[in-house]
Length: 533
Image 1 (cartoon, rainbow, N blue to C red):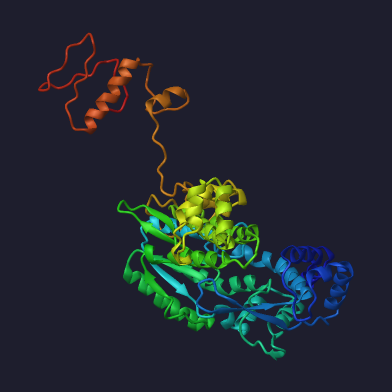
Image 2 (cartoon, helix red, strand yellow; image 1 turned 45 degrees about the vertical axis):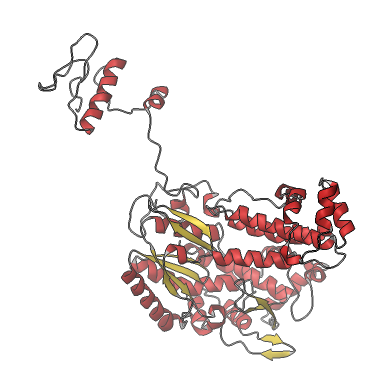
């Protein structure tokens, strides 16, 4: 009962309402918007608390909306709860998250505080840098629609002692879907679009994570997007076979046979990124080809303007999407962002040329942008097909890429992963992310780890000048007594000679050189007693 009292507490419900109001969102089946609920939100929260306390709360059916998938392979069905249901679901998340968060796998990064997609991308890069160059790219077939609700409720009952909360979660899972006025029952799966679904997805897949950790295998997971890393192809196939059997037997889930594959770093598409392995063994992040193709397709569609539409409106539409895409992929380590920004600028130039529909208007606009009159007239009155873009060069001079920086279309600086923003080494924020410059076991915790930019950069070697500038530093073992600069110089030369397997020829200004055939004598002021030579 204590957990249920936390759920219906005024502070918890108010915090959940503020979160729902910040996220906005579309209305549910009752048609009530966030703005309509906000008019009398205090009374609504009191009524919700009273209804929950007496066990009379009944979730409304979910409104379904079909949206295209990111990769363009089909449609994804989103289930939208009502505003009131979203508040209760968010209140459940705030109460249940502390029960599972401490025991979640450190290699799971989705829907968790202080973790993000870039942390998963960076950890995968570190695993590849350590020598695990074979990747098992897993794709669970229709994960959200295929979750076993009976097994999920069994997992929840192991940690939730309050039957009222369990009954409430079961009511939400079986509230049903309403499509075109027809109510369909939901006996399987968890709805995409519910505030509680991310936590439930992590709870379901945490059993797989814990099994991977017991076996000592290397993996990185973001929601249902998971990769396993191995040192060889045979090991990768063994991991794939084990995962396929475990999902089918324990979680009643199945892998997509066409999308699940064993690939090399350059072939993987993990959260939009791929990886390049250089001839020297260095792994760098790259924008995936599918992500770049999707960006170009989306920008091309947004740049299509309607007749008499203001050019500033077209620019704002393209810039809004391009800035988000560039901000996310600014974590890359190649030159793709400049090319993507240049592509978006070309599309905007084409939109401007289409909006200047008459030759006279095109000539006037080009002259206004600083083009000479004869060149502007020749480009404006040229009769060419619109898809050939013969005026692209003159448009680039009239509106260079720097012109669109005034609208906010610029390449942002690379972001830091969320785990690195706490000013702690990534190995402490993400246990097991050992420094990739050294081969190590899959899951040790190491104190010295690499940051987000210098993934395998070795520590700088101290120089003699830097050592002399800092009296506290000790580049050499402590000597028995003080020595002169000349003696220190001969010590360094002697060590270099030993490393190069040469005969040492140490001499001072007042001592003749020692012949190479005779054993070298050690001056007393060069190597004091007890100094290791």
